[in-house]
Length: 333
Ligand SMILES: Nc1ncnc2c1ncn2[C@@H]1O[C@H](COP(=O)(O)OP(=O)(O)OP(=O)(O)O)[C@@H](O)[C@H]1O
Ligand SMILES: [Mg+2]
Image (cartoon, rainbow, N blue to C red; front, side, top):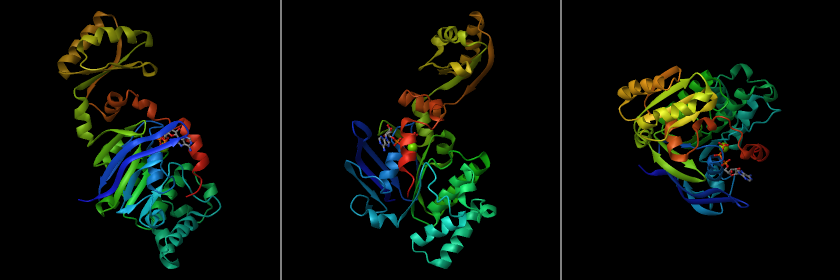
């Protein structure tokens, strides 16, 4: 299968800050790759370069066989993109927004209207179709922006955090839409902070941090890299966490992780059920009261933690230092 997206040695600097530091990536045609990384890792920067919105300092990129840097104009007709922050016209209705995108892609008047109706229906926005976007909720804008990316049925699609800010129902809907698109042959690069989303949708996951891909594989491959089961314990008081850590250290086959806010301690172990019995015995010997205990397989969060040293929990709040800047610069498509 040929690669629909090829990225080689992409570098992007903002003054002294290196946002992309020699990023390499390939996405085979008709597959989904998720870029997974903490705030500021370079996900949005990558998407902006590949969608011609940003010029890198060096490196090469080809999308759908077209050189991104040499033929940006030509490329735009072959891709669809939706940004991290919805780029929709406040004063137009939902219908008018999509119709306008259709015209920009030269679909013609009739086809543009038809496509707008189809997509409004698919994203459950038909009832709001004729209202100005000004009165839409955040999730509705997000869905409208995503619909915009699909108007021209582009063979390659870039979605930057497509489900951030969507309610659970809208998220499931979007997953269905994405699965249909991919079944139809669309190539997709998406960024996400949700491990379950990468798990469910992506054929391959590229973990990025500090502007480089630090690991790549299927969700299962990445989980296998970190190995072992996890014992997860909640103690009755945050002060007891350090005692628990010391008591459980002999059982750990990797780094023990503490989440003081949740009074939680996670311990990677080799023989899960035996280790669980041992752990409970050790904690009771140290007079640590356990509120909740469980054994689980490694999650992508663990992968993250192991590879980057960042807690995946830090991922959920999307207000990195880059966020405000992007909001300021990402108003137009
Ligand atoms: N316009 C800009 N000017 C200066 N620095 C920027 C700009 N855009 C991004 N950066 C910086 O580049 C780095 C990468 O940012 P980027 O937005 O690509 O990260 P991200 O992975 O999308 O993060 P998030 O999960 O918060 O969306 C960050 O350190 C960010 O602060
Ligand atoms: Mg981003």
